[in-house]
Amino acid sequence: MKKSILMLLSVILLIACQTDDDIPVTYEEGTNEYINDWIYTQMKRYYYWNESMPAKGNLSLPPKEYFGSLVNKNDFFSYAIHTSSSETFPQSLANSFGFDFSFVEFEGQVYGIVLYVLSDSPAERNGLKRGQLITAIGSTALSQGNYNRLYQNLVNMKDAKLQIVSYSEQSGFTATKEINITQGFTFSQPVLSKVITYQNHKVGFVEIPHFYAGLSKSLLNTFQEFKNQSVNEVVVDLRYNGGGDVSSATALSILLAPNIQSTNQFIRFKGNSNGGEVNQTFKESLEMNESQVSFEELRAVHPQIQRVYVLCGSHTASASEIIINNLKPFMEVITIGEKTVGKDVASFPIEDDRIIGAKAKWVLYPAIYKIFNANEEGNYAAGIQPTVVLKELQELEIFPLGNTNEILLKRALSSISGNVRIMNTKTIQNLQKQRPNVISEPLIIKKMWP
Image 1: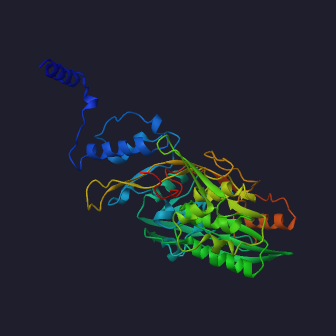
Image 2 (image 1 turned 180 degrees about the vertical axis):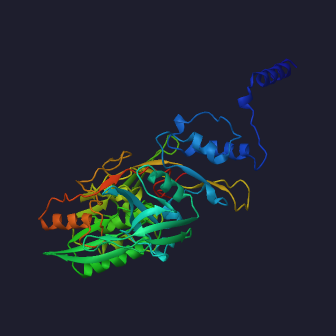
Image 3 (image 1 turned 90 degrees about the horizontal axis):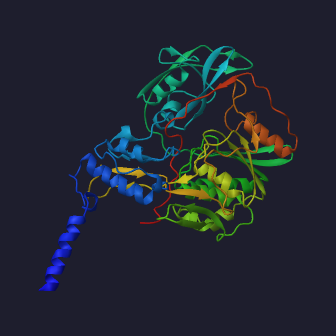
């Protein structure tokens, strides 16, 4: 009897001592509180900066806004989407229309220079080309006071109307024409490649717009052709590659690096205290998401090179930066261009699968791992400074990618030949463009812990 009374008193005392935080709270399915409580739990478990996260706070906020309230102030890359709401998806000109441009001033006039146009995109189908000059967006002419605002407005438009001129040093400006573009889908991009005979060198040039799962097959074919033509130097153009899949970037690294084994460590992922560290060899990193081509097949077409030239710039991010950083322990990497974005974090998608069979759901892409190479080198959040600093926009006329007159490729070829000439012919002023919210593709890996 005494024991029963003591046990009863203990239970009553325990209940009396509980705080509100100790009692599990359940929320009505579908409410902001229901969603945000799940978001907070996932971020506390997976997010790289989970220890600096604030308290739960106001769970009644819209989920995208609530997610943003948890993100570290130095994290520009984590985001959340709802699969049935396109408004929650990262917005960019590349995603919407399939092109991007930068701003310059020439003889007192502001122009938008088209940097790239994706293959079979709405922009290409309507006649837009690299090197064309945008003079007006809608009916508003570009100026020093409005170009950033007009650019941000364009990112959010469904339809774009652009006033375009072309320019060449030989013939000057063409007449203005109007191009109308409607937002649409752009699918996987082809790899541009060619073999350039330059003095006594056979140079393999390859331009990769994006790293996507399945790219290894295309890369294998490209490097088979390089080998067939006895290429002895390689230039990889990643200046407009915002990243993507780690495994396809690994495939390119396997093709490029001399004297490597499948068991050599290629990449190191460092997570929070829950996730710890994950080390992967070349073979393991390849097989995470690339099943079409084996390590041995890729090695069989490796060209006889000891160094690689990488063309880079302010759009080079994520998986592209892995090529630069993670090849350094194995070969000389010579980068030409401008400083890269500095995305040294990787993500895997975290889906809200609590409602069985639901097609519409929230998916989180938080920064989960920091990326390092085999020598423990990483921490390039401020961007990777190129070996040779060179702006590609020096003249109003710019050439197609892969053209030997194009300034970055021309500099790489002159370095290969040993006949480096100082290129300082700048006649235009580059204008600063505001940093958008999401400026690169997520660096995607498979979920490596529960």
